[in-house]
Length: 361
Ligand code: FE2
Image (tube, rainbow, N blue to C red):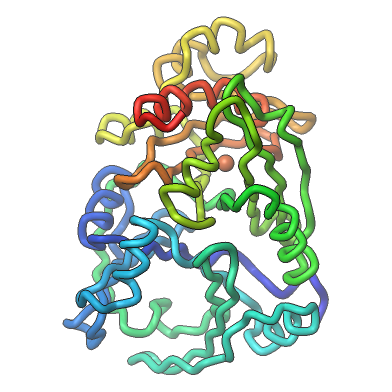
C-alpha cells in the first residue's frame, strides 16, 4: 500500500467536557450545527453521554462522564474542557496498523472489535501529544454512518456556512515541536509543509515557533506550535499552564463566505478577538486588491493575509470554555495555501491584551 493512501481525512473531533449537553447546545445554537445522534444510558451506554453534531463535512462529538470515578472526569478535572480525539478515517485498519508499526510507532493500541446495533467495526488508536489520541476508523465501517452506541436524532440546526475542517493545531512544550514533527513525518507518513521561526511570529512580549505537517496533499493538516522565549509569557505557555499538558489549541473551519458566516455567528453571541483599528488603515497596502469591502472587514474584525498563491481571510474566537485554552478559527481561502503568518503580529497584540486582563502576561 503506498504512502498516500493510508489516511483519508479527519473523521470527527471528540471533546471531553464537563457538560456534553451544554457544549452541544452552544454548537447547535451559536454555530448552527445539526444534532445528528446521541449516545448514553438510553441507548445502552452506561458510563457516559455523547452528542454527535455535524455541519458541512465537520463532525464533532461532545462527551461527558456520568460517574465521579470515570477517566473522562479525570481528563476534565486535569485539562478542563478540551479535545481528546482527532479521529482519522483510514482506507484499511489492518494495513494502517502495519504501516505505522513498520515505521517505528510503538504506541498504538491493538485492533479491537466494537459491536453496535448495526454490526461490528474494527478500531485502533494512535497516541499523540499530551493525552490527545487519533482513533482510526475504517471508511464506511458503520452501516448507519453512526458510531456504535449512537442513535440518530436528526435535529437540523440553522447553518452558518461551515464547510470542513481546514486544520487542527497542537501546542507542545518548548523544544518538543521538532520531535512531534518527526513523529508525524517519520512515523505516520506525513510531509512537512512550511516553517517559520520565532522571529517571524513574535511581538514585543510573547512568541512561538510553528511547523506544519500535512498528509496526502493537504487532506489532513496539523500545525504544531511550541512557546518561544519573549519578554513575557508566550500565549503557548499560557495554554500549556492551563491545559496542564500539550493539547489541541484550535480548530480552523472553512467557509466559502466568511462575511456571512461571521456576521451570523456574532449575531448569535459568539465572541471573536477584536483587531486594532489601525490594522485596517494599512491593510490594502499589505495585501493588495481584494474582493471584500474594507469597511465590512473592519466592522467584523476579519483579518486578511496574502501569499504567493492568493489570499485568505480569517478570524479567531475567544476561548470557547472557561480556561484560556481551546478556540476556533474561521477561515476562507481565496487561493492562499498558508496560515496567515502576516497576521500573527497583529493578532498577538489582541491575544496579549486578553492575556494581560487575565494577569498572565
Ligand atoms: Fe490556524
